[in-house]
Length: 416
Image 1: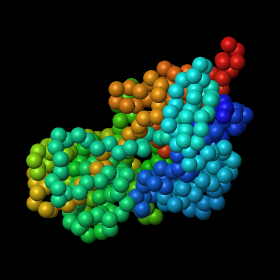
Image 2 (image 1 turned 180 degrees about the vertical axis):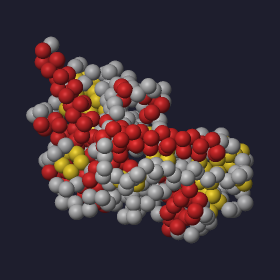
Image 3 (image 1 turned 30 degrees about the vertical axis):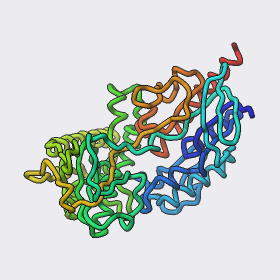
């Protein structure tokens, strides 16, 4: 089988690319190993909601309102996200081949050969839209957990009822970690959170959603080539946000108020001991400092824009840290029966037979353009081209830029 472009992945990014390709009349196919929105279907816990308010859910030629949504200030549940993305696929009539697993992508002349379990495709260009969050990152801590302590990743977690009775250690305090810790503690289990680097954000600021400020102030549109150290920025943890009908703030203070115990970053395992870093006060102080700088930026923009539709400037209490946090936990005592790794996610490309993978297993690219392999593109990674790239609304601009480049590449092949 032959086509001009093969898009690997039928999530919101792959579908946004499909819409852009259709706008340019570029023949293509979208290959998906499962169903449309597969990762939203299979790699999320039961109660998860989007971090972004519904009015920010928009893709090229489609948005929450055109989808039929009636709660713009709410936050979609996972079944609602699945229906939103699936509705988009239907609306744009994307040429998706579901149940088709890609087994190899390799160069061939001026293009590529894409092998799948349903046959082979030959094409001039390939777009990798499998996302940057399809494998859990579990740290190598130089030891193993005691036999009586079970462990699972955030991808494997579904709800508290599936956990063993007893206390839970959540490792990681970004969006995933604080949300899981909150839910598990509300189920009646004692919860300890091992806190590393994190980004603190209130849900509301001066009467508006914090992501309204990110978008309207222009921070969401900050480009990857405008920051001093894009590698560092791309490693920034996801903000401590949760989507709830109450639009509640979920930070470390909120967890402490509930009775969740905070400890330092999990640094190593030695025998039955979990060794903890003494950096908890410093990590929290740094997060507080960065929050203050962010709010200063919003205030300056509001003053320059002469906004009169928001409340007065606010500042929030510093993160409360235990006076003497422990430097170790004895996992053999039985207080902790489950460890949940909320330590981030990464992408894996075992089927990519093209020399574009760096020593950390990630695709080398320049804003989504895989420069080491002309005609190959990647989308859906954190801060790919803009600060908003990892959110649904970021797929629109990123896909437009990449398909513009892709079309230019095709023109150059014809000219040659």
